[in-house]
Image 1 (spheres, rainbow, N blue to C red):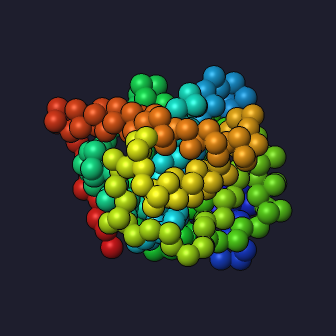
Image 2 (cartoon, rainbow, N blue to C red):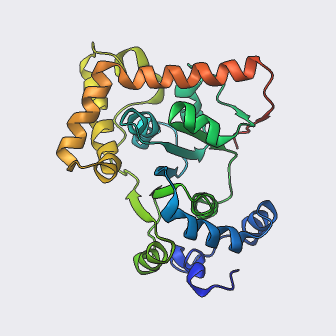
Amino acid sequence: MFITKELNSIIQLFNGVAPSQAVQEQLQFEYVNLEATLLRAKVLRDFSKDQVAYIAQAKIDENDNNLGYLFAPFIIANLNQPVIYSTPVSMSVLSILNQYYQAEKNLNLRIEEVIQSLKLHIDLVDQVNTEQDFLFSRLIKALCRADVSQIFLITHLTLDIQQLKQLQKYLNVEIFVIKADRSENLIQDEMIHLRKLLFKNKDEMHKEVCGLYSNLNANLVSQTGNFNHSQAKHLIEDMFYSEHIFEKLSVYAEYLQTRIQNGASYKALSIA
């Protein structure tokens, strides 16, 4: 796919399972010269004033503990770090976000403007055929941005660590692989009440969920700041109790709803 041999590490990340030809062709179409864009971002990354974290999370299934990572961008933005979060649209994701804004409408916005205003951008995408295709496309999009300094891949897959190290070194970017949680589901989606999860007064069930979500997100936050895992977990728990996550989510939702009401163009996302 690439002339520059170091870039072919992107193709080889998935332990011999290459991304589909369809997604490779789609990216080649989307970027007039994909290889040149990647190399240009590599050069400009050293000069970028912004240090954006990019999170790509594999599909969140129904009643999935990994739903907790959906709160990651609001947590990281609260730490005053700009962040882009992307995941395939699913009923579980919409069950949370649709309580605040019409998340199934993928607005045609300039990401830079959103990040400048709010420090975060949520990018929900239509279902893709495989987890490899989704992660590959998001990784390419992240690497094409000179302002992205850290990339988090939340996945069920096992990636080739050697290829990952080569890619990080060559493109001057940190890439972290976060293994998706596979433990027994703690709570069903319909039992999650955001007025309890995101506010101070929680019942025992939502205290447990808060602890789980804080522990999961500490995997990311401990890499974005000068925190160890324990410190990051306590910091996140404080955000769940102090309403800081709710406030950030509300402001983001209000921004998007205003744009929708003002006639911003959008694409309606579909759930397979």
